[in-house]
Amino acid sequence: MAQPNHLRLGVNIDHVATIRNARGGAHPSPLRAAEAAIAAGADGITAHLREDRRHISDADIAELKSKITRPLNLEMAATPEMTAFAVRHRPHACCLVPERRQELTTEGGLDVAGQASHLREVVAALREAGIRVSLFVDPEPHQIEAAAGVGAEVVELHTGVYCTPSLPRARHMAELERLRAAARQAAGLGLEVHAGHGLSFDTVGPIAEIPEIVELNIGHFLIGEAIFTGLHSAIQRMRALMDNARAAAGGRASA
Image 1 (cartoon, rainbow, N blue to C red):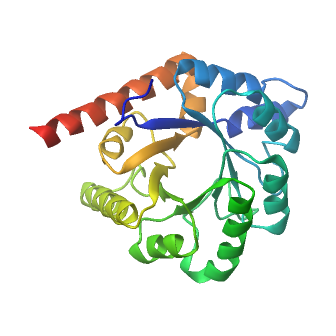
Image 2: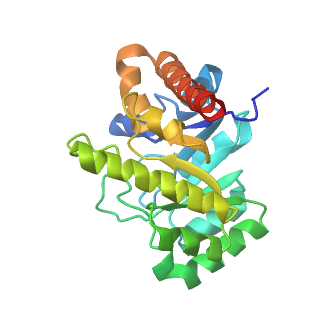
Image 3: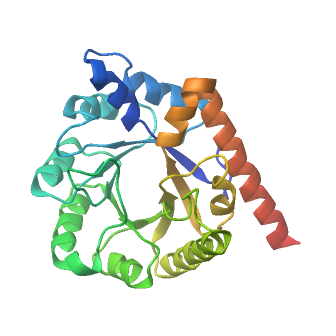
């Protein structure tokens, strides 16, 4: 059983589907990857159903929803098509993210403050269907306040800037402090706090130490690392780094 201070790990399996789709057919299987991730210590599975279906497909979501033994988190754009799809399939959670067809990956957080009216309607429809709703946001106070205002239960803090390899150390530390402050603010507003985007073995520790964060969602790095060490090994190492960082932070707090 998970401990009260347990930091959950959601594993994003999008790029298993990317590899499958590069050649067509059924291999490698996102479902098999999800099952392997769960066996290695993942607390949940995340998949992003994009409007152009560039990797995860409708059939993948249906299969994952029906067969995996951990919660399924569906990342999606806040569009009528995606909302209807989510309501039909009813995953455990939906994380609303910005989406542009030309981008390679999600770039930046939602402009919740600028789209509050629209997002309030989408959040309400998802919650009415019994789906837990998260908003992917930059660590900016006005966006976090807006997320609480539109009725979301969760915010996922965008860690992409913090994880930029070329970032000068001073900017890196400033971004980490922004994330810490954002997590405190979100928790103070009654939001559950998640984080993700770009996290690796080298960057996960300081994020895992932030006490208000209860879940990390990591995908691209783990799937890439699996090429060299295997998916089970990559996830187990990430799980250990998260657990050690959280334990160390707890020890300092109680000292």
